Image (tube, rainbow, N blue to C red; front, side, top):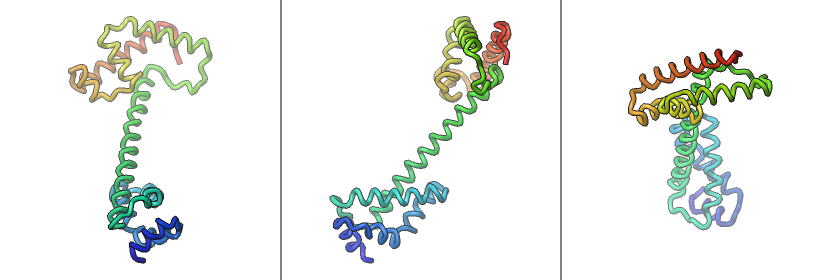
Length: 185
């Protein structure tokens, strides 16, 4: 079907416009999304989202080149989804941080009593109070704010390996402090 006819169907709010768009441009939009995302399901969702965006944009917008219009929408959606997945991978930093802390505090899977939680909180507070300022800030930035090693190295004017070593030593001090407080898991 001719692009002008498809656009006219959008202006008429005829839902056949989406079906005709898919027939004519579905593979094209999928190709764009797939090259960015490399995941079939995400690419299919991007194409579907493209049709929703086109439905909402036409009218009032009347694209002179429907293919380019749809391609731009698909590309932007795919790039947004890619950024989202990339941001999700940063959350892997969260897993890494908890793995680091597992040297000191094994996962209790919610089986801690209220008394144990209070004792742990008090032990953490006393440990942090006993640390020198820079080490306390470094510890909190890593294990409370989940700051990446690279960022900590930059902010503390240290090498990444120095940050890792310092954090390891602090964790070992923390483990020892917990043991001295009688907190074992």
